[in-house]
Image 1 (cartoon, rainbow, N blue to C red):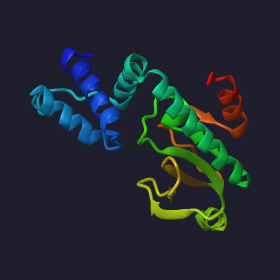
Image 2 (image 1 turned 60 degrees about the horizontal axis):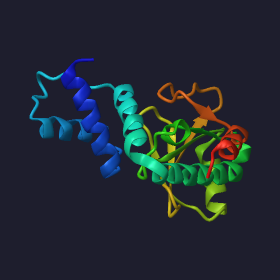
Image 3 (image 1 turned 60 degrees about the vertical axis):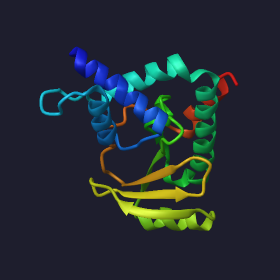
Image 4 (image 1 turned 180 degrees about the vertical axis):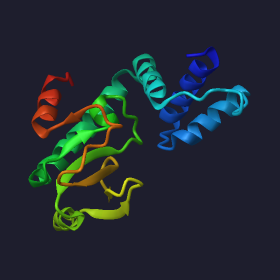
Length: 183
């Protein structure tokens, strides 16, 4: 990775964490601006490079505050997973991987014949839902009013898992991880 790209990844990571951004394109543009680099002549860092820098940022500056926030996000995820157990939920994304910031979604992948089945289950549980369709055609049910933002991605049976997410935790695995994490 070039020096400019490495620096750009570090600045974008800082912007993402400190501003709780979920729009990484915006973070990259802000990083370019803050460093006075040209978007045409500067190779942009990949998501993986930014994630590595977010992990470094948390290691350097996160202290107990980040650990407590991540613990709380994971506890919220486990509660949601228990409530949706019939849909075989898996936690994935930044909360599963441990690099989440306070604005990161808790991303749950569930399997259902219909997104409506999951939506009805959530409504019956008293959740406020904002439903949308993702670019890949999967339904995204965003839960409003929770302590942490939750996104339930409904995947039809037989459809492949989203390849962007490297780690997927079942409720049992998440419970084990929570029990191993010092408070």
